[in-house]
Image 1: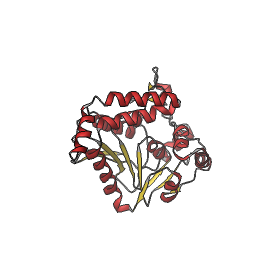
Image 2: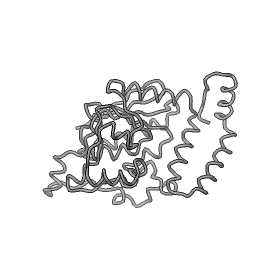
Image 3: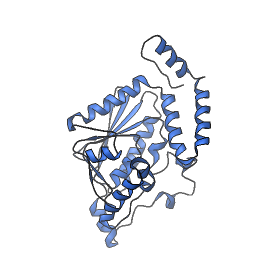
Image 4: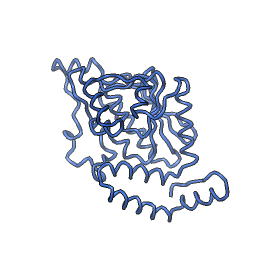
Length: 271
């Protein structure tokens, strides 16, 4: 069983997912619904996802996997098996309808606050969040090869871009779990904090984004960084310069410069 609860915190939305294991696609669908609605709300400037129990997510439910192994249950259909339309909105970037990679398409920055075990499917989903913070109690890994499986849902593409090819191969082949300090050293997370300070740290980061950064600038920055994983340098330079040109005509640009000169916090409107 799983439960997804929402908590508003200033201009951030906290998504508390009580999902010790993934039994089916249900948790992903509920997360998708909640976070897509938040992305459409101009008053929400950051989204935090954390586990409501002792773990972030410990992966697939072993009862379900046992049923699949015995032939009494059917594996969840993959995106390419259920869609006739392309899953791309721009180049190779997945759109908001993609079953697992949709967080990349959100305008709002996403922060994963990893409070415990983040394993298998749990880590696969976590790779698609913009920023990952970890409790000192966190353990992260792709354990698939130890269960007779390979890695899934695009983690073979995302993981090397986060930790490098060598570390990605080591994690994928061995299925080893990384301690929080090892995940930090590998670049899998950007910060490790004492367990009781994890949510305060995530909230502080969300508040900093909400109070200091333009929603328009954030959305463009996210779009460009992810889009340019599929392009070349010349294209990236052209697109970045085009974006700067457009944004100099925006209300947020005018407000950002004015606030700086007047030595006050900006009041961005996202236009």
